[in-house]
Image 1 (cartoon, rainbow, N blue to C red):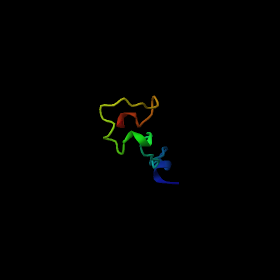
Image 2 (cartoon, helix red, strand yellow; image 1 turned 90 degrees about the vertical axis):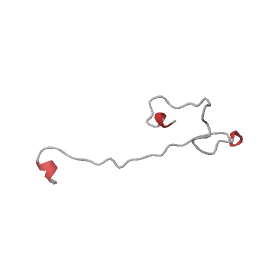
Image 3 (cartoon, rainbow, N blue to C red; image 1 turned 45 degrees about the vertical axis):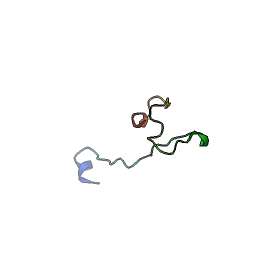
Length: 53
């Protein structure tokens, strides 16, 4: 038992991480995140990566 548990609480470290991905048609010419600037894009509502877009 760690000292945090002995005091009645538990400290956890978030180690889960996922990267942001783009899905495009190969013919779109989009190669990086800057390429779709000023174009219409879509994201799943409520996802944590939506602000990155």
